Every structure is written in structure tokens, then in C-alpha cells.
Length: 263
Image (cartoon, rainbow, N blue to C red; front, side):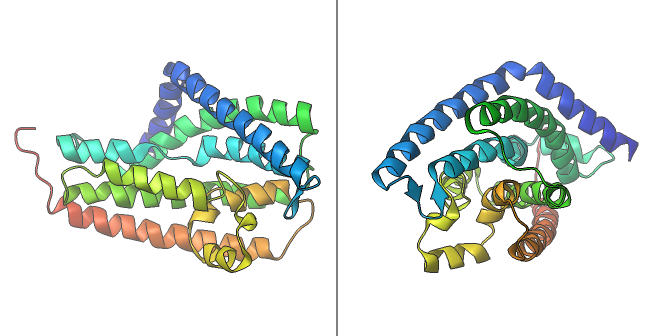
């Protein structure tokens, strides 16, 4: 267990060392946020200040919250996995007394904790200054503490499953870009899922994507407790368990195909 705490610490130190990279990504998020800000303000004005179940203020609060969530939930490790397989670097990890997938999860978690703290400070401050913040309630705390790691695990597992196809294909990174495009639309990252037509929104509720961004964001933004939060948490954690088992199975199957001549 001690070695995994050390891996977590190393992930944190990596994020500190490459903080310029993170600040550049913050700037890109800021540009995207300002585009969304002016877009939704314009849309709301043409619709009398309301967009479906959202007011102008509530949809802007939603976007600030998703920016903070993305700091913790968004997984970039799929590219590392794909390159380790493609270049044969995975062989170096197989010689070490630890599970490679667990190593990648914990190392990235260390980085994401740092990103989340900075993201919360930056976007949380903007959220409070511009829009007055979000209502706080004690009942949200256990849901958030379960929903955020659950969202990360679901996203990580989907990314990892795509990257692990590199055992059977030349390079799996191109498939990751397709996945991120699908995720950005159907997860609530670009716009809230409940703005889709009702029948389509019901289908999305059964898919894993909205449990990455939309579900945690709605918990944080909600002013009252809803029974749907229990069902959402159950579906999210079920997906996390199923995908986690799938990643373990595909990884073990891939190792039987893996070759690293000369490494």
C-alpha cells in the first residue's frame, strides 16, 4: 500500500513540475467558457431569459461547475497506455511489483487532485464573483465524494478499454479522439443533457456518458434532494464496476498477445 501512496505523491509532483502546461490548459478552458458564456446569454435573450428548465444564470453556473469537474474527471492517461503498448514501454512496468492499470489510475489521480484544487480556486472564484456561487447543503457532501471518483473511474475505464485495443491494432490513439468527441456531446460537457428531446434524454440516461459530467454537476447545482440522485449513483457505480472488470479482463487478454522485442 505504501508504494501506491508514493505513486500518488509522484503524480502530484509531476503536476507541480508541469504547472505551465496546466495553466495553458486553464487558458484554453477559459476561452471555451467565454464562448459558451456569450453563446448562452445570446440564446437566453432570444428566448425570454429561459432555455428549457434553465435560466440564464443557472446554465452559466452549470458551465462553471463542469469546468471544475473536468479538472478531476477528465482522463488523459489513455494516450500513455496506447504509447506504452505501441512502443513496448509496457515491458518496463511489467517488471515492477505493481499492477500497471492501478499505477496509471493512482498516478493520474495525484495529477488531477492538483488540477482540481487550482480549477476550483480559479473557476470557483469566477463563479462566486459573477453569479454568487451555488447553494451549499450538507447532504451534497457524501454524494459528491462518491460521484466524482465514480465519474473518473467510468471515464478512465472507457478510455482504457479503447487504448487497450492497441494490443491488437497498430495504434489506438485515433479511436480515443473519436471517443472524446462523443463524450463531449453526450456527457453534458458541451451543453446539459436535459436539453435534448425527452425520448433521447431517456436513452442517454441508460448510457454511461452523462454520469461523467452531467450527473455530478447536477448534484452540486441542485438546491433540493431528489430521489433520482440515488438511482443515478447506483447506475454510475454499476458502470464503474462493470467497466473496471472489463478493463481487467481485456488487459489480461492483451498481455498474452504483447511482445516487446529488444526492450
